Amino acid sequence: MISASAITALAKAAGFELVGLARAEPIPRETLLDWLSAGHHADLDWMAERVDERLDVTRLLPGAKSVISLACNYWHTDVASPIARYARGRDYHATMRDRLRTLRRTLKQAFPGVTDYGAVDANPVMEKVWAVRAGLGTVTKNGCFTTREFGSYVVLSTMILDVEVDAYASALDEDPCGRCRICIDACPTSALVADRVVDAGACLSYQTIENAQSVPERLRPALQGFIFGCDICQDVCPLNVTPVKAGARFEPRLLASQSVRAMAGMTRAEFDAWVPGSALARAGYDGLRRNAAYALGAVRDEGARELLLQLSADANAFVREAAAWAVSRLDASPTANPVALPPHR
Image (cartoon, rainbow, N blue to C red; front, top):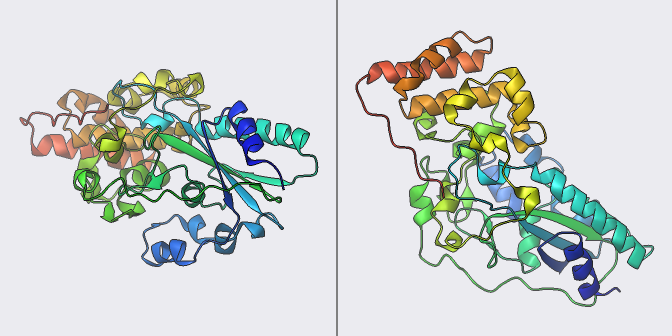
């Protein structure tokens, strides 16, 4: 058995702002399987893989006794951007992995012989479940993990240990949402299908990041001002009205200040200058231009007509299709005023 307070101190010294510890007990199967069986994971087939490991961390680390949940605030600015806030700076996966490596090193120095397993998103670990169990916050109606300190503007990582600690946290006994349903009503695609249940296939974040094919036509008009991710359900949440500025590792890069038109018309050289090292690399050059073409069509940006016509002859089929759809939106209502972009706090 080792000291929980010592682990917390080491984790904070490594750069993590919120730290909690939970017993490495199995997660009820319905927590994941009900969501999967309803098809809410769209084509995120990896969510249906390694289910036993997701639900029981002893499958990942034999003899696991404790789980450390770790969170960092990423909110940085109110400047409007077509990019979701978490993706405006350095890829948070890199930042969290750097901090996990530091924690692993200092933990082994303080407690030789301890074995660990670290995870940041890509591993089969249900990080929100562990963050709740470790008392860091709650899952709110928009499906986001939300903390008292930073609202939902946090990213998570997890470390599993094969030793017990002398004190574990308890899940918070509270529901900060109450009867509020602002996020549910504000979602432009009705992706929040039930209390704390997100249909990934209808979510703009999924469509602009994970979906490598064409975005379903019924969802395209909702892409007003978004080319990578979506912050609407967080922007409208009353629990996020007093965000806290994050540290320099989450400071927005040049790409965050680019307009939708600039992203639609960017060259490969501009992509190579703006995107590497950021989360936007996941969408790729053609994916970002596809998304930007949809966004220009969604707001009927007449000033982008020439650019969209050029993109209608692009080498990439999905960019061509998105641009052609955008031009058809302009032709269908040539005198209509462009739709105002939604506010981004």
